[in-house]
Amino acid sequence: QVQLVESGGGLVQPGGSLRLSCATSGSIFSFNAMGWYRQAPGKERELVAHITSSGNTNYAEYMKGRFTISRDNAKNTVYLQMNSLKPEDTAVYYCQARRTLSSGTVLTYWGRGTQVTVSS
Image (spheres, rainbow, N blue to C red):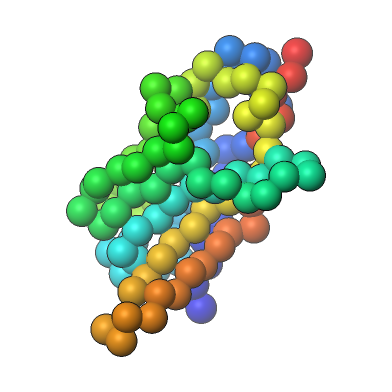
């Protein structure tokens, strides 16, 4: 059973920073890619950033320059460093992991989410 456990959310003032962590229950190398998504109240879940097993990254356009995704293979953990936070960044942030089987089937796993609130 794959488990993804997010941490690091909280309340921060506009312009502040947070670092989210996502720890996997198994080897991070068992996933082809891992990423962060977010969902604000009344809105659909959206991609924030993802990183492949080879370290290639991809960001939502409006995140570039403020957020950085990284991974620590030794700790089986993926991070999301968020800087210059804005009130519109308020959302539940979810960790996602994807595993592609030899058959081509893609398995997707989700964490339970961590709340990020940006407010003065």
